[in-house]
Length: 311
Ligand code: I3P
Image 1: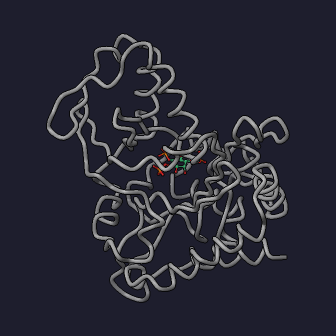
Image 2 (image 1 turned 90 degrees about the horizontal axis):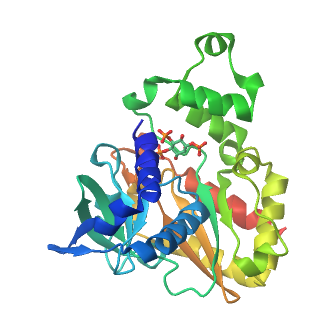
Image 3 (image 1 turned 60 degrees about the vertical axis):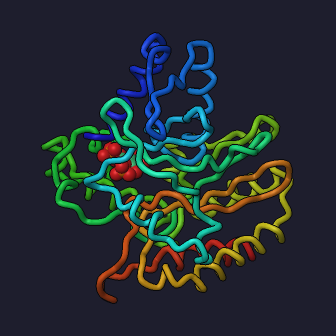
């Protein structure tokens, strides 16, 4: 239930601004107060819009130096290892955020990462999760959970088995597989995980609700993709060119010859009619030991996305 506790922690922080005012953060060995009362709300709303845009459910703070602090659970994240082992001259490198190390704040660990929208005027962000499977098998995901049963019930009650209906619970593995199957993930290897439009775009296009995104068909996903491109006044040819450059970079990457990406997202950051592509979320990505273990379906997802846009 770590997700729930992170969310609760953030909620508590938001509700209690005095906690914030006095909060000390340790960065680079020095204790400094990063949250001043008047700035708290602004910082939190920045944080929420970034987190929402990128499809994160919570657990991201913004440090005084502008970097992001992403909650880190050592036992189930390979992200620091994945990012710190990535050679600086690897073609994948320009597509990832800078990683500045692990920070400890009030007993919780955070990854200090580059804020990818730091220099943007008014960014729109779309998060597309790649791969035909977005999770790895983990014994911790076998515990029965009532909260995930409720989410599944809202999304598609007909998919629950009589046993699940009678217990009122499902395991996280079951839920995540269901999410992959319900969305375009299992079939096409990509799904829109989150969209956040800048204020300029918002006046023309409304961003879909999370539940709509979770159940979105390929046609609707492409329609929303089109809204993102048109709303941000991007040229389709530029979008395709950037996607193909990324495709080439991941093909040329030596690092990705023996590392796989699972549950990784491709971030489209549109700002002032320009587009930047970045890859984020490497918690489940790792070096694979054998060819059998290898899952390259994120490449298929990227290829499918490119060919769907080309049509
Ligand atoms: C959540 C999503 C998150 C996952 C979370 C799920 O589902 O898959 O990625 O957190 O697990 O509930 P949804 O997007 O449908 O709301 P992790 O990536 O950390 O596993 P959680 O409930 O255990 O936090």
